[in-house]
Image (cartoon, rainbow, N blue to C red; front, top):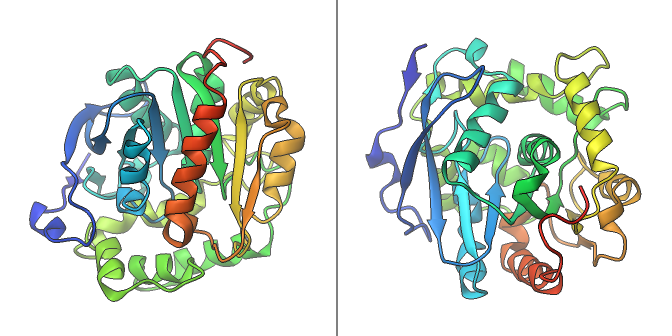
Length: 308
């Protein structure tokens, strides 16, 4: 496998991003060992912050200091193919299962337990699967602008327009994509920070491949495993919270489905945030971090072994 590694100089001087980088080698049954970058700030109960497409841990810069101030430990990895993590040079090297194996490799290697999962976009496709398959490591979940598709329910025109764009555009303009996914456009230095992991188009094979890995038909290779994960989630009795952006056309309405399907969502203070788009961490990061802190505090009496 040919692997690209973004030069460290690309990450110097990014706005509001003075966190110490950490690295770990991760792999799995189907995934060759690669270097994954992660942020690890604070002490206390773990909040695992999983980003989506085509962002990276820079997305959590507004949230991490607030989580730490609430006595929490914020762990924010860069998925393989993104941020400071290694980037396989061929699209064929990226599969749904490999992303699961790489990400769980980090969770297992760091021995993260009693975890509060915060997952957005592809962070949910990965995180919800992992939580369903390894419930003993998770105490609670916050799902934000995400879902766990099986291909049995149509994904909607907005998703298919995005998928077509991702495959046809000559230049996959990451910073611009993130900015357009926010209710309030990003400042130029933040746009540049989202572009930083990708010196040229050769580094973007993972970002281009992600839309093609979303299960969009019932016979998708990942559909059976996602259905099995749903069987577990429909018995998930641990606290489950949804925080969605009102201005996100791709995941709009998925929060109601999650709330109805997952027992642990009952009685939780679910929110739909006005003025928040797909990348709601940019639009409302401070507010969301405070909600996570409140959610952990309110549910601390629930032990990690309760429910599924």
